[in-house]
Length: 62
Length: 508
Image 1 (tube, rainbow over the protein chains, first blue to last red):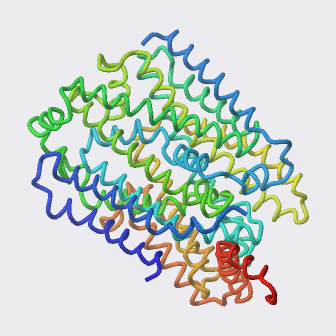
Image 2: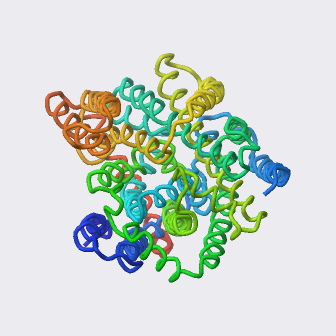
């Protein structure tokens, strides 16, 4: 699979950013509720972008 | 903090920033791409810091902390969705970069005009961008005004702060165009991230540590840790806030123009990843500021005072408070000068040069430089209106700019897209969003932020299908993306290739 297809995983994370806090975490009134979820989602986005853009490294300066 | 400490700190900051701006000059830029794009030779590190400083404005430290104070953890979700939206750069960045190099585009509106073979498209996109971005710049200016007024207890009045920021922004843009803007942005970004993280650390320590802070919130403000929480972040409001911001990296020309600038795709990657790391830290810090203010000062009369109250509190040593305050002012300036620069390049390139065909690069540049302070003064006027709720107002700008998104996606992925589709979508959506704001930001129960993308997509697709596309320009455009990217890809293999060609009997 081409690397840029993995962008769909980012969009899946975005979808979860709507669903999980609004459907599953509405009663978790603590740091390990929505706060932690969105923080982890942010880290996942960074990791996915690192992966997706890895091929950019091959396009050296010109 | 005393008034004299603040003024002295501002003077020192200006001295350093002006020095950097002047050092950033590299000969005289007489071409549009030299002045507005740094000759498409910007390196990844500076690009990353500047992209961050441009995107994260006074809105973050004042607005997002305020939004967290007022509505709780939903503010973090809002910002993380925006942040995830910047991943669009991973997909569209190389495409923008490739066509920019091939056709010499200076502005995103010029790119759309070329792709849809219509000067009117370029002009409409430019003018619509001005219409929405000048109020957005005004929001940043107002942020500076509130901040200086709040932290000095009115010793530095709102108007003085606003005028100071405008003057600095004009100066940074004038010295060396995008080069001085990017280098001063970088200084500001580093200052912001270091000082603000330090403040978050000190304040949280002062409040008894991370666990203690969240325990206080859980007992005294339990709803701040969930959505919809206190009610500010109802699901519909959340959608209305997040959808336009998700598309920010494409819809806002002051950041999409940055995709033309990196020296290589490697630099673009550094820009994207650097921005994401910066943005992640900055987002968490701003949200933690808002939470800390909620725990420490639960009875503020306005949420926008959360940050100033925190900075003036006993937890933050005065010198650090002043550094952060200047960092926030610098953040606003770095957003405004980029907006001014982008808008003036659009007006010169896509409006002036299209009205007066044959206008030389030099002439376009002159027009751009004349327009720049005018944009700043308009923003100053808006800021003086002293509108409340910073975050919500800047989202109004994003809702309107979302109108460009279907045409941008269509430019690269849908050959059937037409100039008429783009024009109707950009102008129609702009008007529709303004109409929704005029009637109280709710139409059939949905806010402008949700309607923007629905209406613009429907208009773009519907009108495009009813009109004839310009096949030749679409083909040439898409072919250019493939050619440029595969040409570059070939370069990676060039050592092997050269090795082969060096061997006897093989021709290159």
